[in-house]
Image (cartoon, rainbow, N blue to C red):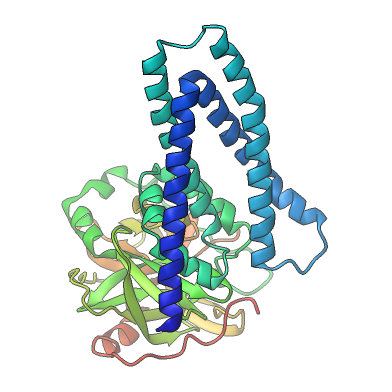
Length: 405
């Protein structure tokens, strides 16, 4: 309880700091006006972007052994230096232009300056929060997740921005996709027709979205996220590699709202499957589908890049019995899988493969290393045994070791 109280306290402090930062920039925007303040904020954004661009390059020139905390310190320093330099240059230009009477009518200019400052500050802070979330140390991951201000800032970000920012963080933290095939030969990629984009708009697929969840796992020195689907009352199916080593698990229905704490009740690293017990979860269980034929229309639902909820149309290339590695890269894992024509990203792991009527045909777990338009999902036949046995489990099981140790 003491640790939880500390996290809640830090989250409140972070909320206060962020709100003061927004208010402070609004005041600066009011005094500077739209022209001077806008150019200054543009300089801040440009400088911060330059710092983000320089971050991995600077890390590459530093001696090895830098952990997540040191990497975050480097990130913060570069972003702050870039923002300060950009604001100093463009802000000075804006103030000189305003002094010469180029600005708008004074009162309107001030009002627009304050409003613009708030918008830009919120967007920049939201982007930074999404970018660092996958790699911050576990206690700070909890703080970010519990911060109401961070939640509000990230909610207003457009989905493509969230995905781009999340992708930056993933450059330092592997998502841990297991190897589906082992051997020197390329993965088999069978042809399939272009997916029918209309499949994503079916009534069944839209209704199923209310039972698809974002899964967050804190542990192993950072935060990882994936997707999941409601399999039975208060039970969520996801991938084992999403929650491996996690000490604090949570889910969000459709990726929005307050996270619900989850307990790991089943964990199979060979299949790459896990089941969570989420007390109080009211989302309806999704029905499962019969085995799918080749070229069948499907829809992949999830949270690519750890961002907003998305669906994409796909096709079944083939059903394969694949021998590969488990989530710890140990050989001997044999799985029945669907090879899909779909482009999967980190964050899609554990999400459902839906039929057009909204039934679950499989669970996403990997992507091809040879073809960016091929992803892999565990068939219902492969997962049904563990899923059915977990329908009434409530006792926690260990998530074993972290990935890549």
